[in-house]
Image 1 (cartoon, helix red, strand yellow):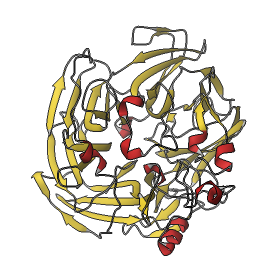
Image 2: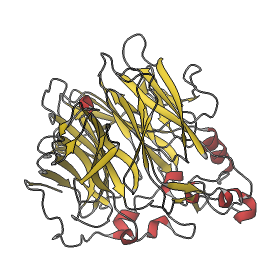
Image 3: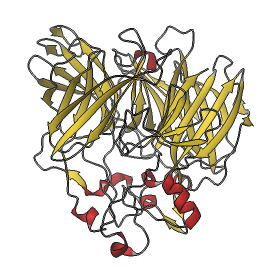
Length: 512
């Protein structure tokens, strides 16, 4: 495992293809077979930073096979949450499956009883799946703290409440009546670090159809109001909305409506999962939906709709505001106030067809995610786009204390080689101004998931802190946790976890 730095924005076309063992990558697709409680974990290399105090929560699919039958896509796996608690230079690991209704029923039956959004079918072929439109809330996408509850999130339905210490499932929560039963609640909230005097969790729910409605919600996260709804608004837009993520600034919530169409017929007929019925709309126009936040300068105004570049976006890095006309800082000009949105773009919607085994996919046939910056001129409703990196990447974030502000640094998971699509095998820090990059690599036998940047408690520099990253170690068939210095990307410690965890989705850090 290595660290490297490059001070130029390089011609990323000279890198040879990366050689990795397909069996190492494939071996991470497994079931979590045990649940641990506060098991001590020691560093196999390096030393745990004593200032790192708090809990790293992570969520992801923990069961990919049941009764000898595999899910069609890992995103259909049942949610399993881990908590790695750091205190005074020590670490303890706890993990629990989220006891959803579907998980309990299938555990008791020993077989799959539900279809999956991403193509998993019940045994018995199309006739057994025909007209079965039930969705199993699998609580597998994200885990965040809100008030006294830990929430396991799955964006198509209600969150599950967990005990923050034991990870015991308390059950579905409607957040004191904020949500209706089964109402969609995003699995990708954003945390406002205090742009208007108080920290907030900003999130949304979407009701999709020929005309889609976004419900924007803001919750208090500190003080006696923690967990309470502070504001909300609902706005409707023409077109089908497939929204996983969004971005925030002090004044705006920024959504990107991908140009996709949804044909539900194969889902109704038991032939495909709901997500497999999505496809890029030929000739369609992507749009930015800009919704004023109730705490901002444009509160109460209607949303603005701006044509967006072609491509497909799952995740945004960050968004921020330019408040006046003039140079945008990237070689262009804006006529008035502008929004800058940094996102990971795919050339097309990446999907796995009904007849493809996800463990045998050809990465060369799937578009890679590339980091791009869009500057939206709010006076002219025009967009200027700039490519920030040619390296395949996902799961990018900025320092959470600077969410919604102009940031210099970003941290992300990347492929080992400089161009082309491959599994994610490294963590990269990117200077968004100079293009300088620093990379910690787990190749050739390691594969990474989302990095979480944790600011140092007393730190003031934007890159003062740590990067915590989960790594699948193909050599030992289990999961590691690496702690990196966020500024230099030098490895500070590596913990070999006593657990084999499949590739995860999202996580968060809660300071003590």
